[in-house]
Image (cartoon, rainbow, N blue to C red; front, side):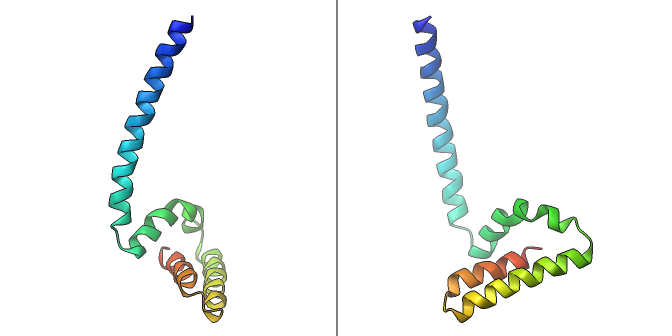
Length: 91
């Protein structure tokens, strides 16, 4: 029984190592993309349900995100504000 567990443990460790290397390669590719594309890829699934809504609910979400961005901008948090504006642009 312990031989089976150690064998399974070794297989799982190898699988984790392989997956870690694969993800590291994808991460390098992702990190080399322009910020607006990174945001689009990241936010695609986050706002998928909003994209499927009618026009009026979308405008409501746009306004919230825009106002959040404006508040951050007025607080001189320019990078965070830019991310909020990018969220709006990904619709």
